[in-house]
Length: 170
Image: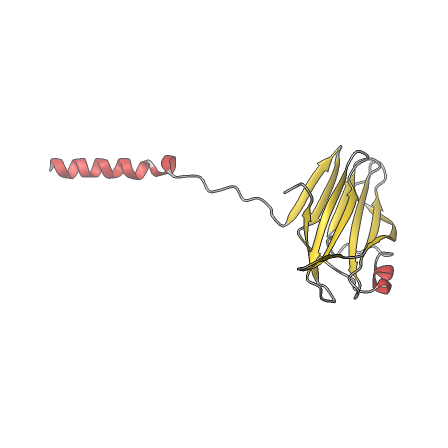
């Protein structure tokens, strides 16, 4: 009988303590985007960024209209003046990356951004690398800082996406 009581007490102690001794699950970080902040401005970049356009005609037409249905592969949110700048990607058949931007502004006291303008801002020829195409793109985050993005893709056309990392930032 004593053995039965000792076994029952031991079982109760064992059952009641696992919550204290079990390790906590690891913290899950969002690895799908790169997020950086500087002076109230924020940069959000998709690590697997979609390439929405494959010709200059397509990007020229696409950046002149507001498209709120699609997430931008690169977005800068400026604190002052309040703006959201969406950078869109086009890779031509020769491997040139064309960067277009859509600028959205917000009036003081308003919560919603309104499409202001769209334009092609820069183009980058591909650097020669064994794995395919590589582009180094500088994105101004604030007056004091610029972020350099590395965009990589296999040398095939048309492209559906590019892999994005930052230079010097994990």
